[in-house]
Image 1: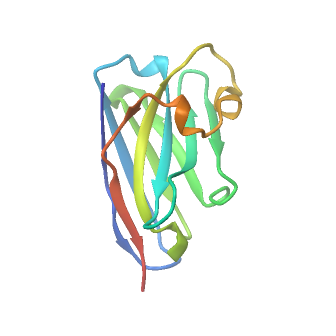
Image 2: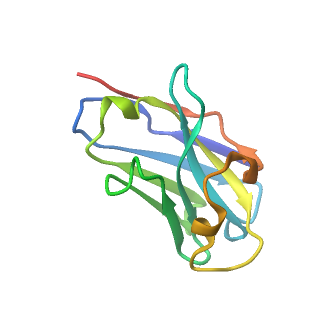
Amino acid sequence: VQLVESGGGLVQPGGSLRISCAASGFTFDDYAIGWFRQAPGKEREGVSCISSYDGSTFYANSVKGRFTVSSDNAKNAVYLQMNNLKPEDTAVYSCAAHKRLYASATYCFDLGLGQRHYDHWGQGTQVTVSS
């Protein structure tokens, strides 16, 4: 299992950025993909989850309405579109894979964003929001 993030960079407050997670080595439909972030000196926190097989998504309250997660099954890729970025969004963003146990339209909501549920992790991409 391999997860590779890309697309991070420097963006001004209020700007937008889309980061990507390329997955390989496993059957994409069998997994839910989560996005997590870790800011300097802080614990890693969950941002979003998507289970493309059943269309389930879930967002942390801190990003709801600003971030949108999507997937492209043909490319085995997951994207995180981040709009109206704030300085507090500055962090290393990582994607992680969780082997789905069943199919449900609320799978990601049921799963939550606890790190313990995700077995495979990428290295991360840096997102910096600053003027």
